[in-house]
Length: 186
Image 1 (cartoon, rainbow, N blue to C red):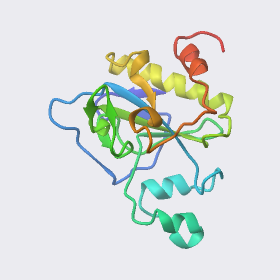
Image 2: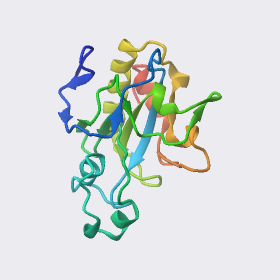
Image 3: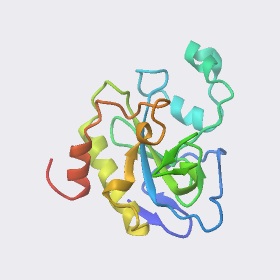
């Protein structure tokens, strides 16, 4: 994959444009990557429901859980599915609506300065090998464009919204991700 620095879009990723984003505040640069876990309905994979959620086209009649989240306006920059496919919803230089109320090192509103990457998964279900490989590659690419993002600036949603969010969950292998980002064999 290659990042087009002018547009913020990844070449080689599927592109499904979300309306749920806006510009970052003036003078605010990307300094954080937030890793999320998502499955819709909870615990089920595939079906295109994440695309529908991020494009405001999720049909609440298809599942009882969808009725609970009807009207929610959220997005992420990227989704890495269970097979390693990467879908991009928001240009990386834009502000996706993924973190909600959040704080990192005393700084609130993490959407302003972060890139949100969703992994198709759930807290207690192990993530796939290809998801780790693809996530590490994407993080390395992001770091080429935003070198302020070091190892301590790759966090889970649970880290910036403790008590409110738990993803990517205890099944996520952080040491493995860090080894892969560093170019070490798993």
